[in-house]
Image 1 (tube, rainbow, N blue to C red):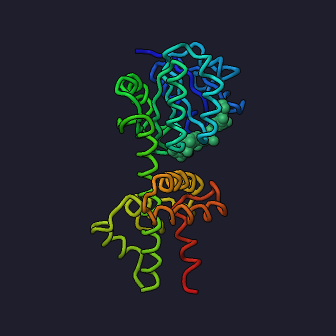
Image 2: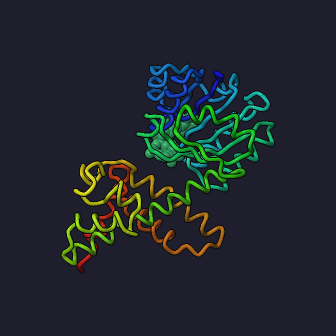
Image 3: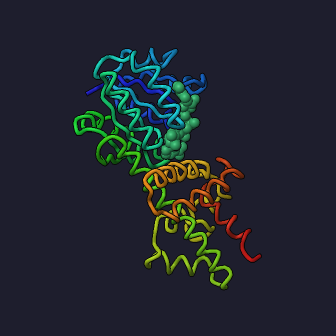
Length: 296
Ligand code: NAD
């Protein structure tokens, strides 16, 4: 069934996601604060609206893909009164669990329905429509959003009630951040012990050290030719995005009083690393920081 979708936030992720909705036969009313992003969306077949309120006024579903929780809450403040009652709001941005729950509550209080549905898969997944969505909200909201999520991704998991999608996202990325540091430390330790990268890779990738950080995004050049280490650590998944996600995880760890020492330490290490390299380096480049700081 073709739907009319207001798509707010047409950046690196939102632009190609909106284009995939158009390709799947949906009518997309796009809006972004940056004119160039709107031009690209128009080129991909979306209609563009002068304001977010104008975009949502005629929509069945509103999808947002914005930088952070404050942007989502500000947007909802602007548009909840402009949408038709019962409109489904799907926020795909990666934001604080608490902000996601607040956004959900405000949407419901305004007579709307809501789902949080952050993604994994990066810009490559957004372009190829191979994202994984992790959703939080009611069964019927998830069922209604599913055909749209399937047009933009290869998998959608309903994780539970409001905020559960964001919770799954930050827990997954906490595993990823901690495991990338662990893999990087192991390679640097191996170097100091005279062990070749290839030998450690051959053992660990088929033994109990196996994980995505090692076998797909290997932080040293050589063993996995497609990993960012082989292209001077160009992203991939930028250090700044990992620092952001670990910051969200650290907020939740502290708020919940969880004893997650490695998650908190990973957030500190990635925050310092991202301050230096921002979005210019893949998060696996942290191996160089570990190497530089070793041997003193
Ligand atoms: P981006 O900065 O490229 O895009 C965000 C867009 O939102 C920008 O074009 C900006 O102009 C627009 N925007 C901000 N406020 C707005 C408003 N009030 N109205 C309309 N437009 C507004 O960021 P991105 O890389 O596309 O990431 C978007 C979200 O996806 C983030 O929450 C990020 O954490 C998450 N994410 C990104 C990746 C990735 O690899 N880039 C992967 C997974 C998740």
